Length: 295
Image (cartoon, rainbow, N blue to C red; front, top):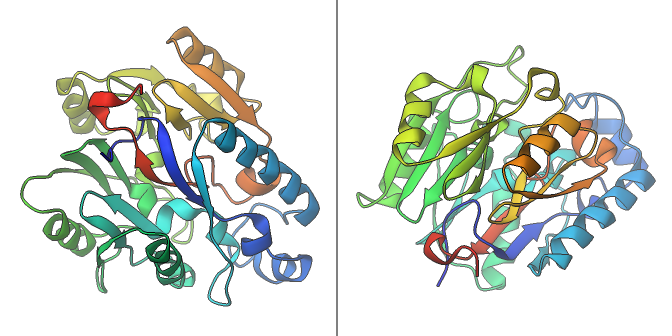
C-alpha cells in the first residue's frame, strides 16, 4: 500500500547526485550565472556534501534510485522534486515553468518507468507545473501553488489527471523579485506530520491557513531571520523525523520543542547557492500511507 502525503516514512526515493547534475567544473562555470545561482558551486565540496546527505536518507531505510545525467540537463537537475509528481495513478510529468529545465521530466520518467513506476500522464503547454508547488495532505487531498512556475492551465490539467475524488486546494503565491527566481508553495510550508506543518506565516494566504486549520493541522513558525536561508525547507523522513539545513538554530529549536527529531546537513554548495533545500533535492516515490504513517 502506497501513501500520498509528505510525512509518512519514506520507503522509496529518487535523487540525482552532483556527478549526474553538476557533472564537472566546466559545466558549472558555463551555467551557474545564467541559472542565477548565488555564487559558483565548488564541485568537490558539492560531492562531499551530497554524500553526507545521501547517507542520512539511506540510514532512514529508504530505497534510493540515483537518476542519471544527460545532455538535456542543467545544474538545476539536482533538484529532482520539480520534474515529476507522484500520485495514486502514477507519475505526472511536469511542464516546467523554467524553460531551461524542460528536459528533466522525460529523462527522470524514463528511468523510473524502467524501475517499475507507472506513468499517469503529463502537463502540456501552455500549462506549466513544478513539483515544488505541490503537496499531498493525505491520499485524497492536496494543495497546489499558483504562481510564476505553475499556472492556471497547468492546474486545470492536474485536476483532470487526479480526478474528481481528489480535493485540490489552490494557493495564490507571491511573485518573486525576478521572473527567473523561484518561489514555490514549498518555500513557505513543509508538512511534518498529519497534524503539523512548518510555515512562514507572513507569506501564507489567510484562506490557506484557515483551510489547514480546518483539517486539524497546527503550525511551527519559521522566524523572520531564518526564512531566506531556507528555514522553511524541511524534509520529513517520517512523522516528525526531519532533515534540514544546518545553521538554522531557532527553527531547529522550535521543531524539537514540537516533538520532532531533527538531523542537519551542510548544504552550502548543493542547497544554498542554488536555493534548493532537502525537499528540492528529493523526489519521494513511496511513503507509508497517512493511516499507517508511523510504520
